[in-house]
Image 1 (cartoon, rainbow, N blue to C red):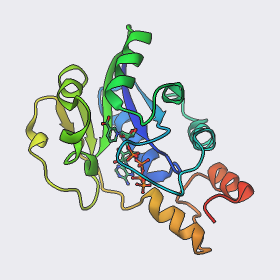
Image 2 (tube, rainbow, N blue to C red; image 1 turned 120 degrees about the vertical axis):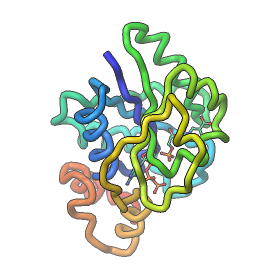
Image 3 (cartoon, helix red, strand yellow; image 1 turned 135 degrees about the vertical axis):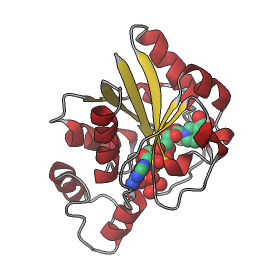
Length: 190
Ligand SMILES: Nc1ncnc2c1ncn2[C@@H]1O[C@H](COP(=O)(O)OP(=O)(O)OP(=O)(O)O)[C@@H](O)[C@H]1O
Ligand SMILES: O=C(O)c1ccc[n+]([C@@H]2O[C@H](COP(=O)([O-])O)[C@@H](O)[C@H]2O)c1
């Protein structure tokens, strides 16, 4: 199978992530999308980063009803911060029968040349990119192993959701209902 790997902090997972994953799974040649929960992004220092198991639980709840979506905690047992090339290699070794591609939001494309061994990621895996508002243009848009997916931009982020919660505002419809209930029950991001 051809699998799209959607790496992220998912702090928390939101409808933007779910729409990206669904467009990838239903309008491209990808058979499944696997969410890879990263304990620690090498570029992000975030004091409101929830424990990785809480973020994993929210992803599990969010994708429970979709047979094309899976989640993996493979990075939890790997050195931190999480470098995507290391995880891609480990996943490919574990699942030699699958072909893996990397899914990213357009905001990450301009930064991508700063990722560890980004040229190897491009050569051996390739990118599927979903447009994101205010993304900086990148020469990589014309790279043969970069596929730009044509779909509506979604102006929603985990940062906005955390700010809403901090300010006592509703996050209804911004995350699946099961995730919203879990966030309120655990009193996350207050
Ligand atoms: N609204 C969106 N549209 C397109 N891509 C998105 C969107 N939200 C997140 N992504 C992509 O999902 C991946 C994981 O993102 P992440 O978990 O950091 O979410 P985020 O909303 O960007 O978080 P934060 O606001 O905390 O930075 C990244 O590749 C990011 O570009
Ligand atoms: O491998 C790298 O050098 C690298 C640099 C920046 C980000 N990443 C990964 O990109 C994914 C998206 O990050 P985030 O925090 O925007 O969700 C996440 O899994 C990070 O670990 C990876």
